[in-house]
Amino acid sequence: MKVTGFTFIRNAVANDYPVREAILSVLPLCDDFVVALGNSTDETTALVQSISPKIKTINTVWNESLKEGGFVFADETNKALAEIDKNTDWMVYIQGDEAVHEDYLPLIKKEMEAELNNNNVEALLLKYKHFYASYDYIAESRRWYRREVRILKNLPGIHSYRDAQGFRINDRKLKVKLIDAYIYHYGWVKPPKGLQGKVRNFNQYYQSEEWIEERYPVQNLFDMHNADRLVHFTGSHPKVMTERIATANWKFEQDLTKLPSKMNFRRKLLQKIEDLTGLRLFEYRNYKIVK
Image (cartoon, rainbow, N blue to C red; front, side, top):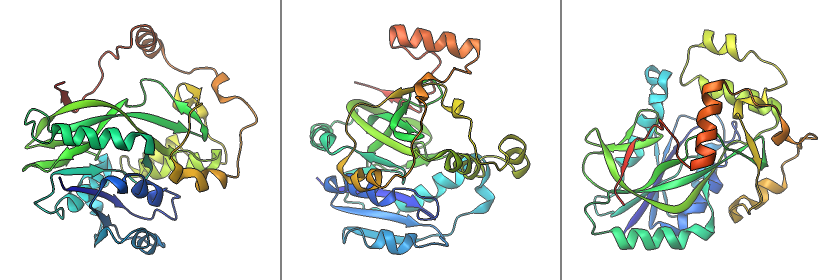
């Protein structure tokens, strides 16, 4: 069974993305790894190329005409995907602000081996923990997606969809198996001023400059209510994140879980139903769970 990892990245150093940790977290699963290196203006290329001899890099130029709507992310993902060897059986996708805890690697490998020849399973669906503001808080609300495809078979027609959150095969949803493994998402772990810059940078790939300036003008503070609801994280982080977490030089004096909610009535009602039943009504699913 051959396994290839892949991702895309641009200006990871300038934007403080943990791309090194992201790749290292899944590298034990992979025989090789493909990175689409966008036209960075910082030291991202040198950083990525220093990680492991398993890594193959391709130089790309982001298509600015695909900027709004986030479609450029899918375009870059597909460039990396196109470089994967045809003999690869499984592909492991990780984004530059994500990581997989080492405790889940044996389970993921076991599931890949078990479903390798099962034509009814085209991908594995992983759960998510969205860290927010610091490494001590998780955002838990309907605002945050619960699951996404990150392990997929190397099948003809596979392509990244919309803004690279998921995949499709010949424009139909993938048949997936939900497994009990988590992606740790760190893209929103930043001090208040960093969060404000993050949301401006993030939205430049979805909205116009006028829209961004109207809703997120430059300032030193950030409205933490963007998360809807935060809870304390009591588990352990992936070992690859140890150094990064140790050097984090900010903290929040207040308990962010105590912030009053700004959810409207509809979101509050749907959230209450989910809390009581575990069901997320009207959830967007870019996949079809088959087992």
